[in-house]
Length: 202
Image 1 (cartoon, rainbow, N blue to C red):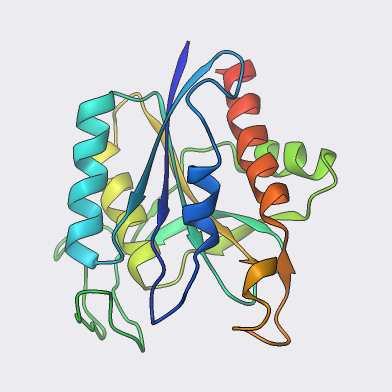
Image 2 (cartoon, rainbow, N blue to C red):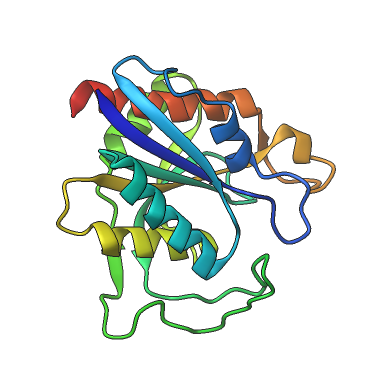
């Protein structure tokens, strides 16, 4: 039985919703055959989110960790390739912390690469009729921060891990007029499809 940890984020920057939160709230422990799924909604805080994520890894001892986050303007489920060693955002996290041109770790690699099978997961999602793509970078806000901390902590360990950005959800159209949105049920299917693909191949 594949042990899988899925995380999302609470709303941020005065937003009312976060599709990544809704994804993990819609997935149950036994939703995917061959997998035992653990879910958690993380706080949008640089230090707080990373600390909680790594504590969850220690608690659940997963074989796979996939963290989800919102990326307004994206038009597909985006499986991220690299986490970069930089915090640099125009907005503060939910704890009021704003970081500019700040390395996550001094004397640490510029980037860590996901250990998720990117193209296989994207192909599996597309086969469900849902837009998906490989993305180069997870940006430089809290999403990237936990991605970097996770890849650094899990380097050399037998745990597959990575980050996935999702578009806005349909219910956010009024809050983000003119930007692409996707129904939450499609995002949930995409998440389950990734878990299913990993359960079949690992």
